[in-house]
Image (spheres, helix red, strand yellow):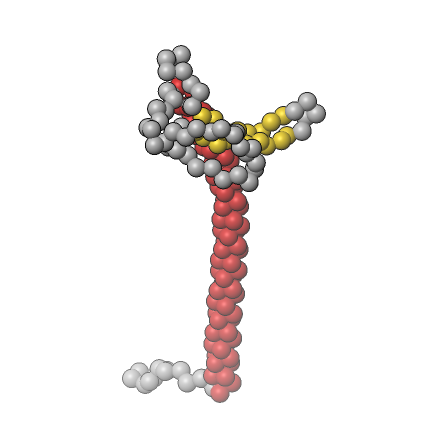
Length: 153
């Protein structure tokens, strides 16, 4: 090298092509790695989404079962409170226009329509009845306060 001379290295054509190929190869490898990472992230996200959907579905099933059981328990509790209320209530005093004399007691069938003369004097409750043969039979029972005593028991 001579002083003051330009010290830049001019590559031969073979070296230039080789560097260009190395650069292309490293770019391709980098792109492939990025694509692979992107695919892995997508697969991971899909697995998480499927797991979340399964969790939501299972949670919804369990909550619905709990809610159905709770509603059944609330209905039974309301029936018990209503029966106790009616057993403690005094019978209604009917006004003259509410009283009717019944000369013939009609037969009440399951399809018979009835009208209450007063609210809060009766409650229709569906009860499970276990008979001697251990068969569960549901029956409708009408609880009322018409025959209660006027004295508190």
